[in-house]
Length: 469
Ligand SMILES: [Zn+2]
Image (cartoon, rainbow, N blue to C red; front, side, top):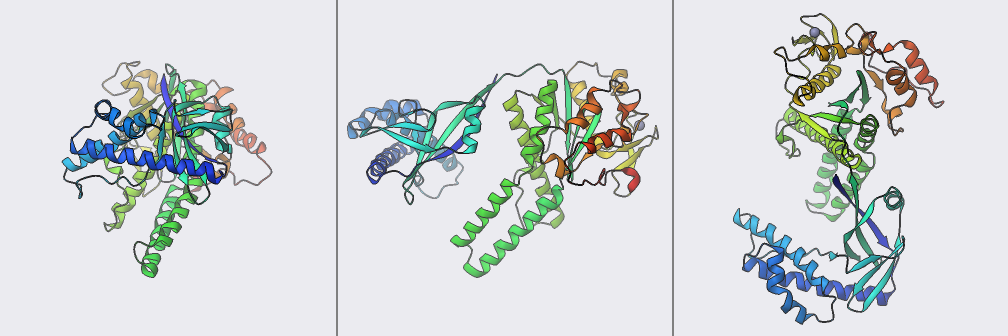
């Protein structure tokens, strides 16, 4: 079982002045307690919550007799985390002050300090007794409620003084049972698409990451420069605009949709997902003033990583396990002959130098990832060539499937929750002949698929056809 948690932010309705004032008082006391505890913890090098609580509970309790006692527990937790990270930075010589600043405060609540009160309100314990706070639930909140997530006992609140509302950070929990995988679904992520190999069929999701990511990067930079010039480097207006830009990007973020589709298919088939292990360097992607090509590379790496993370997170939710394999040579070597594939100038279609068969670069990567996973899990004994006869039989060599992935244009998958059903049925379920006639990817398949689309005209098979290049 894996425990998955998600934070959902809900606002309260606008509170009366009197009630809101109580929360302001509460926050004031809570802030003072945290401040004092942090000060104490840092000057005495106390890093553990239990130790801090043991040492300071009684004093603090006596200072704030009217406050529900569990606020002292949660303040101890809050303070010990702040102290711990400050002490760590101090040790590394990265702090300028003697003590950490306690500026931003959210009030931590445990199960003694708040309770759900039906589905649309909560009760919060204060120095003036329990207060019922009505929520403004939104679509996102209902989704968690309706999909069997449980509310965790911890929550946090912040105060929105301008609107007299509480901002409530709820944590939802779900236990997902992991299963023994019955097979593997390998996924290759690159600049312009995400390719998934399901039972010998490669599906290629067009993403145009390149355009998206670089477009965003340059737009961001342009705006930054403009506002720096007009208002100075630290202007509030720039911060606001950048935030808006970021939010817009988040909204249109395609990674969740792809992750959803891939994880759903894996879950339905009870497969594990195979991803390539990316290097550690991907983390700090936004270092500017380096060679442009290098920068580009880093930004892309970061966005690949983001897609992988989305898949991981969704997978945890569904109890699907994720396996990582080293990507070395995954798109350079033929998965059957272990010989180099030569791609002519920039093309994604190449020819095996030994068997002479044609391969699509991303399909190669998926097969190699799959085989690496198979070899690693011990179900197939490793052979000196790297492949077992069973592995090789999996690949429909005689067909187009090695070089002709099923392209799914973004306009299509972006509106779907799983693989387009007709396509999926035709290629996977009704055709058992994996490895013999190559999955029957006859034109009829695509006709059938198109026939089931909404009236909006689709370009047939966009850009992916090797013969078109
Ligand atoms: Zn080959």
